[in-house]
Structure formats: structure tokens, C-alpha cells
Image 1 (cartoon, one colour):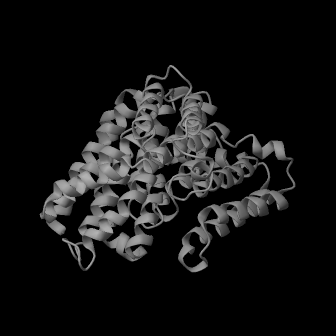
Image 2 (image 1 turned 90 degrees about the vertical axis):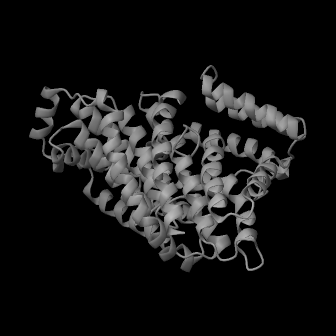
Length: 425
């Protein structure tokens, strides 16, 4: 069954990478195969926390997509798009830098998936206003969201998993990862100037038109905007107070979506049209496929191999965790990988472990998984969501176009993280 799971996953991955088959069709077909041949059963796929679909991720996405769908009806995205374009004076690189900084900072305070759901629609509108192709801007935002989300406990789903197992607090994440993330973000903005240099040519006529616009005229329903922003503020507060309320982010998002739908009075079709059904189905299929690797022991073997190769060197253990986690997170979703690795790291740093008290291993795992997720189009949840939004707006992002930029950013940020870990821990 292990061999079957590896073969099916590899075939699906190659189909997605080759883009000869729709990624949703490939993921669902692969999930169907591992279910049909008995690699995983229905309980493993739909109800198991270790090997099944992560419903928290799916319903977090669904709830926030509904909220975004209602917000769109107010015209607030057009408002922000015009405001950002005018602030950057219509210059494409300034627009990209501004949106990337906003995305990274927001991803640290919220989570990166929620942030790209809010910022990506604005980005498409900004790019259309100034006459540039939105794909490079959307890719840059996905990469920025993963970098910014690394800084805090709530910024990226793998961070929540590590925190729950290790006992590390919000302050621990901010103090240990915040400084290096700021450095990475600055380097990334500079790197973007080089990576996307061919796309920084705007239409002067369109830029001139944007500068003449009054963003306040874009607001279509002020009363609904006030209600929507109030509900969004409650949802974001719920995310931040996760440790106090003990409510999963998915529950908070669904409660917020339900409340907003109830008080908006909008017909269902007006906000449900914004739900990225293809993205949700892709995640479902991908979770089942990765779950088959978890159940058959493939990921456990990989984790054990990483530990065996470390020997008794703290530095070696950190480097292997950093780069090994990055490599694997680029291929499979980083959420199940981190869920599998946390017990291994916990054993290593426990009081009786070979690296007792060496919290640097936790930070190596977090940095490797979060930054490695930037390398490919399916390495992190934010990447998948951005690709879905871009395709819906008529600008499909190919697997290799994303990977061409993401792999460079992943390597550069990991190279920055390497001396940081070695010198600090």
C-alpha cells in the first residue's frame, strides 16, 4: 500500500506540474484511486485528524470567501484599489511593494490565507486600472504572505500546530521569528524588483485616469460596508483570541459568515458566486492524497530518516530540519508534514531527549516548512488560493510560472535563515 500511495501521489503531482490535466480533476481522481484500492478508507479520508481532509482549513476558506463575497458588493475593493494606485502614483513596482508590505503585515496579524482572500481581489482591480498583468503581482503577494505569516503563532497553520505541541507562546514566535522575517521581507521587496522587472510597464493613459479618480465614489453601499467591516473586525478579533476563546478559526469564520449573510439581506447568488469551489475541491483531494502517505508510513519514514541523519549535532539537526522541511513542504502541503514532524521534534528537545531544551529545532522546523512552501504552486495554502482567484478573474497562473519565481524566493529566504539559526541558537 505504501508503494501504491507513492505511485498515485507522484502521478498526480506530475499531472499537476505538466498542466495537461486540470489540477482539480487530477487531485480528485488520485483521491478516488487511493480510496478505491483501499489505501485509505472513508473514515481515514473524512473523519481522521491525522490522515483525513482538514475540515478546519476547508471551512475557514469557505467562511472567509463568503465574507469577501459580501464585501465585494459594497465597492470597498475598488476603493482600496484606487487608493493604493494613487498612493503609489501608478508606478507598478511601488504598487507591488505597497501591496506586498500590506499583505505581509496583515498575514502576521491574521493568517496568510485570510489575507490573500482579502488582498488578491484588490490587486486584480489595481492592475486592471493601471494596465499591467496581475499575475506577477498576485504571485508576489502569495510569497509575501508566507514570509509575513512566519512571524507569529497565528500567521500560518503550521505555526499553530507547532505551538500546540511545544507550548511556545505568541510572544515566543514574535521575539524569535519577527526580526528575521523583517529582514527577509526587505530582501524580498528588493528581489521582486529584479524578478518581475519585465512586468513594471504601465499604460500612461490609464495611470493618468486613475490619478483623476475619487476613490470615495467607488463605495456603492455605505450601510452594508459598515455592517460588513464590523463583522470582519469581530472575526479578526476571534482569530486573535483563539487561545482565550478556544474556538477554531474555521468556526469563527463560519459564525462571521452566517452573521453577515443574515444582516446583509443579499440574495445568496450575489455572494456565493465568489466562493472558489474549485480551490476547495482541490484541497479536499490533496488532503486525502497526503493522508494516504501519512497512513502508509511514508512521511514517518522520511521524518525518521531526517532524525537519524542528524547524529548528536545540534547544528546538524537544525540544518537538516530547516532544509529537509523546506524540500518536503515544497512537494507536499506543509500542514500534514508539520503535524507529522512535531512529535519527532518534541521527543528530541524533551528533558530526556538528545537535544533537551534546544528550542532552535522548533524554529528550524517552522522556518523550513513556512518558507519552503513558497517554492511551488501547491507548497502552501495561500499559493493555491491565489492561483484560484487569479484563474477566476481570467488570469491563470501556471504551475511552472509560480515555481520559477517561488523557488528563487524560497532559496534566498532559507539562505538568510541558515546563519540566523546557527548564530542565535
